Image 1 (cartoon, one colour):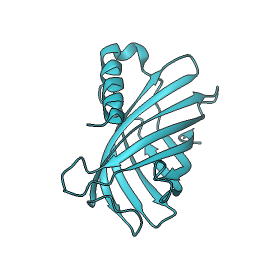
Image 2 (cartoon, helix red, strand yellow; image 1 turned 90 degrees about the horizontal axis):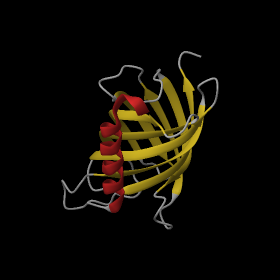
Image 3 (tube, rainbow, N blue to C red; image 1 turned 120 degrees about the horizontal axis):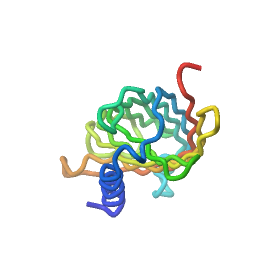
Image 4 (cartoon, helix red, strand yellow; image 1 turned 30 degrees about the horizontal axis):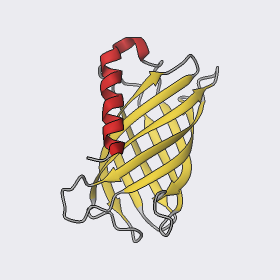
Amino acid sequence: MSLNKWTVGLAVLLGLAAGEAVLADQSSELTVSTGTWETLRDQYRKPEVDIDYRSGMQFWILRPHVGVLAAGDGDFYAYGGFLTDLNLARKIVLTLNTAIGGYGGNGYHLGSHFEFRNGLEVSYRFDNDWRAGVGFYHISNAGITRDNGGSESALFAVTAPLPW
């Protein structure tokens, strides 16, 4: 397990232990992000765009989310999973997320069509509940196949509460 996965896992456990006191206000949201695909591999780095729907339904501290990403090398990934928002300060929100999904394309080969996505985002929440922030996530098949290329993305994200 990489340091990245340990960090996200520890953050989730700390959030679960803290309970309701650190939960951010919840509503359905649409997040649009842009940044780099294969962020840690200079020779494969390409632009990336993500669109993520974050449901207002809450199960304990988790909310479902679904999304899709498209990378400049032709790769794409559609996913569904869960996330949680934690208030770090009055206007600063940490979003932890995990998902599973399907991967395809002709760019850097991740090793499987079935991939896991784990990440985090830190954002500033404006008075109208819009957010702007930065995120980092890792996609990997977690070793379910011999080839496990993995990919990291760094993104700038804008989140709008729904409905507008």
